[in-house]
Length: 86
Image (cartoon, rainbow, N blue to C red; front, top):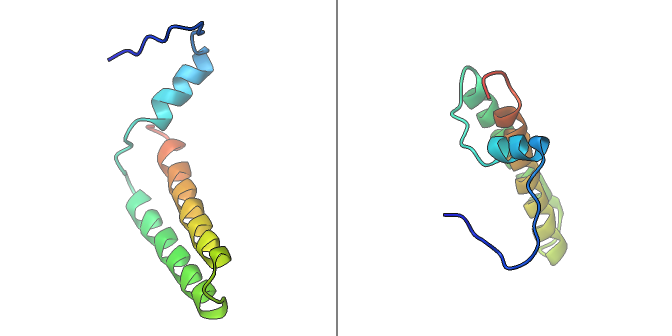
């Protein structure tokens, strides 16, 4: 389904189209990727546990945990999106 706005638009550049295709496509894990995802998940989980142990419950703690989740997601996306075959 194509959305047609009632205002002026432009066509995405070749680079933007390639980025959109890559970033919004599911990348089936291959080779040792699942093991690396698991390793990263465990490291981030341990880090989150340490942060919870030494920081008081607060908005800042919540933001720190959210930032760890985001960092884990971007690390995994780096693997998924930027290796041969993807």
